[in-house]
Length: 305
View 1 (cartoon, rainbow, N blue to C red):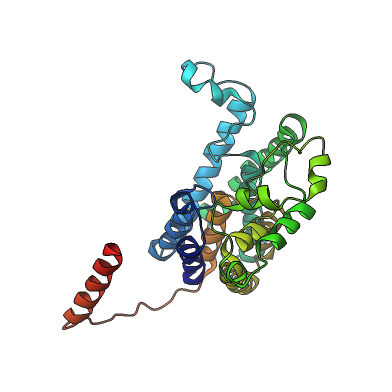
View 2 (cartoon, rainbow, N blue to C red):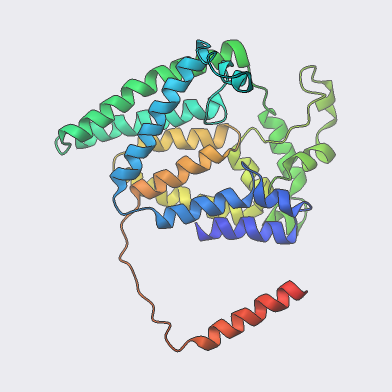
């Protein structure tokens, strides 16, 4: 987790041309990753509280999807007319909604299958309710995407070619081209035959078709290694918990679909839910005033520079 955060921050400092956008962009910036990493370390020890909150959010998303699809938000002022759009969801987009529901559907199935003898009535009720809400969300979300939305993605072949173009020197191989900088790289490195695509030639793509490729392109090997270690640890933990169906959903989402805040959110949520509880270590910093003065001096010098 530390390595992934460092990869984003170092990439901003060393290579990102627009450092403010690279920091605060809601889907591709360093700040969302930093906030999620902090949440991962600060969430309570009682994992059920976080799980119930996430499932409650799924229920809200389910109700919102039904109301939006049926245009039942018409009683709201004109300012909120967008909520009657079939594509509307508080989560941001229907692809993320489908995978959010699919993750909790898989998690519930895994939990009921492996822990059925250990679950009390409340836990079993929550998991069964999650399945009940998840299935219609997935079906209606996929139907709406196919029939009404038909989202446009940068094809995988072009996504890979743009990534390869972006890592042609040692600096970009290690640190990438900078968070939120994929669209700039795409503009200068898209293949010539892209202009021959009738449906895409006039569209500047801001996202790779794969979240994994996007992280690699924007943060380089440093970010890719950090992300790889997270997935490696998560695989080991979820395999031990016999929750590989939920892990598979997360992998498909990350490898085959564009990057978003939501996929990072579910990644860190899974890491939190399935991690081993570590013993808290205490560090005595009494008499370490010199450290404060040294660090203060460094900060002042950097700000001055």
